[in-house]
Amino acid sequence: MIGLEQLTKVYGHGADATVVLDHLDFRVEAGEIYAVVGPSGAGKSTLAACVNLLERPTSGSVVVNGDVLSDLSEAQLQVARRRIGTIFQSDGLFARRTAAQNVALPLQYLGVTPGETRRRVAELLDRVGLADRAGHYPHQLSGGQRQRVGIARALALKPTVLLSDEATSGLDPQSTDAIVSLLKELRDDLGLSILFITHEMDTVLQVADSVARLDHGHIVESGRIVDLLQSPESDLGRALRPWRAHTEPETGESAWQLAYAAKSVPTDWITQLAARLGAPVSLLGASIETVNGATVGHATVGLPPIDPQRVVAAADELGLAAQQVSSGIADLERVA
Image (cartoon, rainbow, N blue to C red):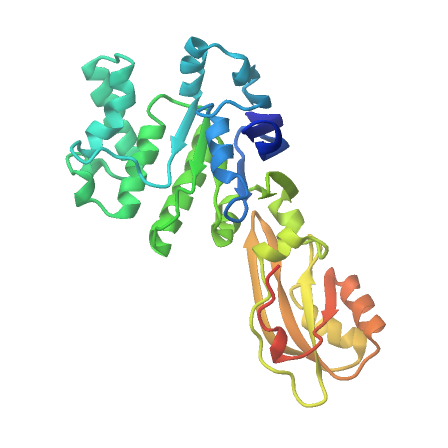
């Protein structure tokens, strides 16, 4: 488990002081992947530095498995940091060391015997699917493979917490998918708490259980991914699942956006909606998928002239949140 309690970071003093993180509170449970998103300048990089105490918080606490890291001495902190494995945006590998030698570095630093180091490195490279790349140098590996070596190195000291700081930034979609799948496997197999800091909303949707949006040092919204996606009022939910393009409705029809807002929406909701309204419903576009075991997403449909209150009520009975599109093609791509 990792938790932040009123974590605050201020640079400068007096009139020149800049508050970069302002009283952040959240908790990442064992076996949970918690994403933090936000625009450039939101404080994400400072957050990552404060979590592993590379930057000392101005006030507040970083708690790992019940221990308050910010209260520890430097000697105690060196030991405590072993519980936090860090995956960096750039893989951080040493160019003149092989994959195996890079993974071995934390073990060698602690004085682990050569035999035990070789055993652990082989186990880790096999775990990340790179057993056959042990003798390769970073320039001989793809970006995704280098990041896998970085993950193996982060796991070398058997941490309970993984800090992923923009670990998929700059990777191609296939490599990103592979890293996401690996992190989820590690979470499941090892019971890790993973703090996933990123600006990539699509990746958050693939990997996270919960998410918080950081803006100017404040957490402006947070919650479980599925809850946010199913909340029509959630700005973060809309940012995670923006409305997609749809075709124009037929002449005389109006376009309606219908978002999945309940845990259970019937698969034949179009047929049921048409029956409730006594009118045909034409599908203009949709983006619907399963996230963390729940069906989420939205669809755009065309309807003949009907009392809007009837449409909203009928959709609500089916677990859908309905909103009329003010003008057809002009609203194709609305992103919160």
